[in-house]
Image 1 (cartoon, rainbow, N blue to C red):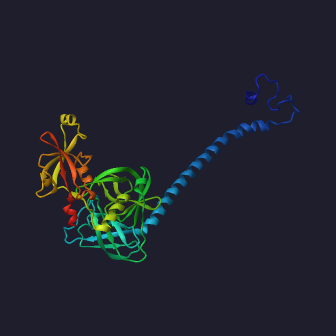
Image 2: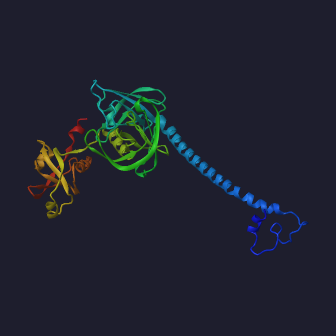
Image 3: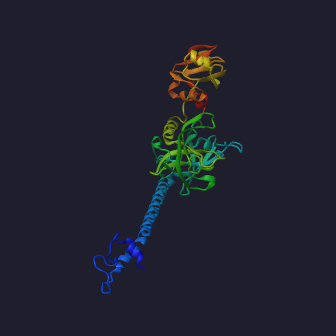
Length: 382
């Protein structure tokens, strides 16, 4: 039984390790308890510390989850009363259109963004409707009037009349960061006031609207969307609307998209003023094609692709400017044009009535023509 104490004694010592500093003997006081107790007490110390550390980590996780839950709850409570359900009644049985996320035009979501009853939603939800019915979260039903809609950005503004309407606040979508918490609120599949949460998966995506134009700077999120969410708000943890939910990719999981709030703010202001978005029109049909490498080098062209003109409308600005089938458009004004989407992006309201230089290739020769765009006939007729 003495072997264990000897192992911890100083090498070469002749003293009894049970009583350091005194000779061993029958009358020596028995103070072995402190020395033998120390090794017994030491092993439990580490487990107690590890348990405390694990408890602290679990507590930290709980606090993190509580903070996440509080952020979602706060945002839902802030914006939830502004969210509305929309039923757009089409003129005929086949009059409803299908939006980018599979919604039947005529059913969707929206949200109040002014205290006097202006509602933002998707164009594909209300476009072509005979009349539109809105249901508030408190159960009130009312008929809405269409202020204006823009299929090219898939946005529309409605107006309702009522008391104690609570608008949502529009935030700054330019301040968004990938990974940021966002909350989607809407009425998927008829289930009103449904809240889902996720993160900003990516920024700057492109998405084709049902009108054929490409929508730029789209927000990608994994906050779950379903048919009926269209037009509902995408909300930050601060309770500000940073996007308008517009589409999902049906075969995929959690690939959902929203129009940025900054785009929605600009489009809504134009729709309130004019009832439509005014865009410039040239009157030609074309397709994006790749240019010959030799031509790109010889002529020092700014892009390797351009627009091949397939058809020029009679009496259009393009015909008056002298454009012809087979021309290759390379630039519009000072901006290089690599394809149809680039040209669409440049045909904005300020271009209407403004003479602009068009650079093109015709039979291998580089030419410059002057064209004066008109207001889009489709926009003018809305």
